[in-house]
Image 1 (cartoon, rainbow, N blue to C red):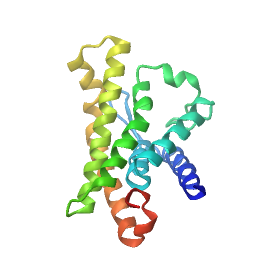
Image 2 (tube, rainbow, N blue to C red):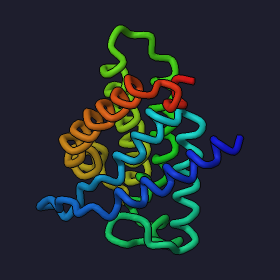
Image 3 (cartoon, rainbow, N blue to C red):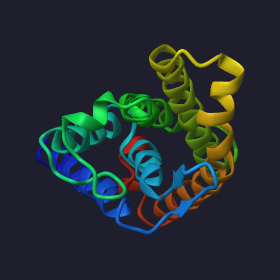
Image 4 (cartoon, rainbow, N blue to C red):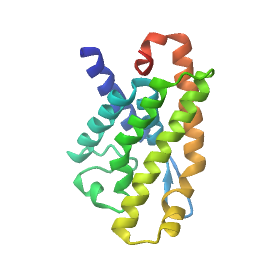
Length: 181
């Protein structure tokens, strides 16, 4: 139990630290940053339940006003923007990613970790998209161009990075990978 709490706290901190890495802002004003890599790693390394708990802890700290989101944002106000669907989807994305890794029996663990991270990103897009459409009344096709399309290249790259990191841990210290315990 104590080990789980430590990992959950460490991964909540990892998400915050990844938000400090400078991102790339697209022409649309949408920042692509490393913070969602932390969400992917929560799932691939901690597993579904613990990964989601780490993300919920991170979001609770953000809600309390700590400026942990990319760009130094925090507080309850960030949960009221049209983009808040991403925040609401973070724990679900970590959970989906983790559950896939937990049950992966394929021949390539690396492929499984990458596919799990991609599936987590897709679940995140779905939640963010539905929330954005509901809040802004934007037509679905147009909303997809705003909420999904700009993030695909960055998230595919982050999924590959998460897969390689997870695979390296799996090879070096399989017991440290709680998603496979």
